[in-house]
Image (cartoon, rainbow, N blue to C red; front, side, top):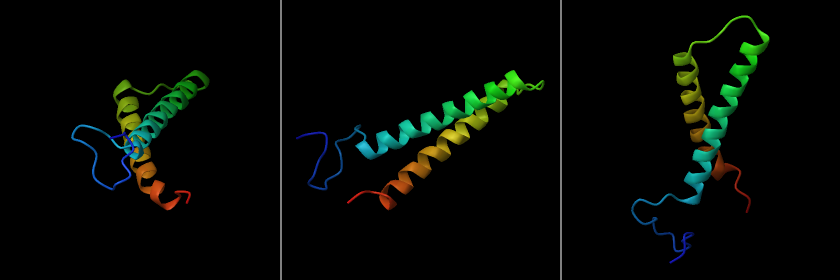
Length: 79
């Protein structure tokens, strides 16, 4: 059976659906985009941000972007 199962049955154990993969990748993009913005802030400004704060907020942004993408996908699906 192919990776995209059209029969409506759940994916095999240990496999992610394309929707979940896409949501996770958007979460990674969101987290990395936040880190780029923080780096720019530090380069332009005189203040620095601690590493634990950067990591913590980047993880929160990644989780939020992942969740938002997963939930919004069904609302904005073409079709």
